[in-house]
Length: 259
Image (cartoon, rainbow, N blue to C red; front, side, top):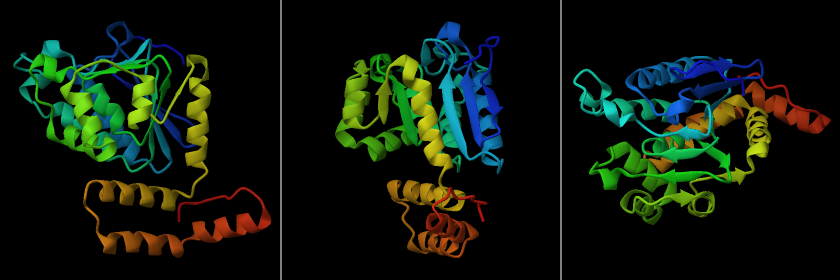
């Protein structure tokens, strides 16, 4: 990945329907400053509103994915620390992105970055990855939606291991608890991410976005049969389904339109 001067996260769009957001403070392990929270929230909004983007990849520059929020700003009156929900709102904006999201974990994951990554749909990382959530060692009570997400995605006992022990976890432990979807050698990470992105891009957009939303609602305990039936019916009547059936019969790749 090409390097650029350190600063707020940058958003790049590809011609294939893939967008990439890169955390860009490698000299400080990509810790997030107040301006980064605002930039990320804006990037997530831009991606969500862009119909040409079909998959979002989030990653970091350098040897770590992210060291969480810059704790030096917690006590600054004009900083994000004076708004204790700023980080939480940023992560919730990521969780609300309608397109499938993949986090490319190029290195360590610390503090709030554990929830930033967990808010993505898929997590692929290097096999040397280390994760640590030190909130309990600092005297911090983690924000509610992050705790809820951990319990919903990992289960209660795994969430307790993550938050109450405050101990480092390696890739093997993260795979076992379901936090990681895959761990590979550093030189194989891009290939693994590209393969996952290609699999997502091969899906019919209407069905892909609809089922992501339905699954997330079910996981949050917001199951609504009428909403799910409406999405099911929309896909059943879609041009994408007709194209998918025709492509299967002709043994050719489908050309989905998202309608």
